[in-house]
Image (cartoon, rainbow, N blue to C red; front, side):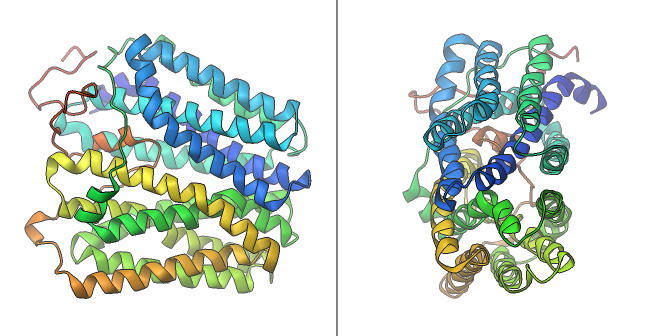
Length: 433
């Protein structure tokens, strides 16, 4: 495994720079937009625009890779994303920022897909689970660091925008210098709603709910803290606390879900998240301690629900459906994340900053009711069909190819084969073993 990590080091380092830069950028734009007096709905639209670009990128970027290759496509997309990061500071104009967010979402979707498909083809089946664990550690560490960096400088200055651009640009270096063999073309992600709801209505509804609720949080969570009267350092601690809490709960909760009906765990977790949202709505402005306690409770319950829903859907699916099913659920999450950042700011304008978490509380409360309904109308998945919970980042559809449970899906001839699953005995591209 150590030898494999050395081979993948360049790609993992590139992913670290991208994820940390993207984490900083999202919070920075929310904080800066609020300081500039942007309407709250517009601040939310910045996140919606990102996910609109992200969904588009999941469809188009693979065609770029097929045409010019992984390294050239990566270089082009990273250059665009880096230039966009600087352009925000050059013209603080709402329409311009919205266009840049679409471009950023498109570029980062392609960048993540290139890295993740490349990593996946470099490892064999026996190492995919451990490689995913390492990648997840990189993802969580980078996301935490990115959120914390908002406190490094004044958001109204050029410095933080430059840091985002530097981080994205640095991702180019290890990819350009890697000696790892380029993989075959990657596939475009497809969203088949009929299939998603047929296999698991709760998983589909859960991923949509997470997109609507958590998408709103990532869009205006920082603004919520600002409007309560706290400073930028508190914003940084608040957002970082949510990420850390979500990281801490992933594996313990996943282990519990492996041993029982996963629908019960999804429903209970959604109920606790609804309560955490209600707590933040009521007590977030009382004191900094109450605010951070609520942040921990929210992150602890909101962050794992997407992974639990994907695991539940996989319990109902055939192994060859895992990758496309999870990719579809991610796109459904993205669709929710387009809508949520528009809805929550409208509520905040009408009822104040606490409405953000009233919004999430209501969304997760509705998921609880739907979860209870599904528990009563359908038997649980047979124990023999359940696989171990796998914590997977929501970076791009290609990341689900790491899932060690997955088997290749038959190609319909319309899309390029991704090379997403190697047999355990096949040679590892770019490796001497």
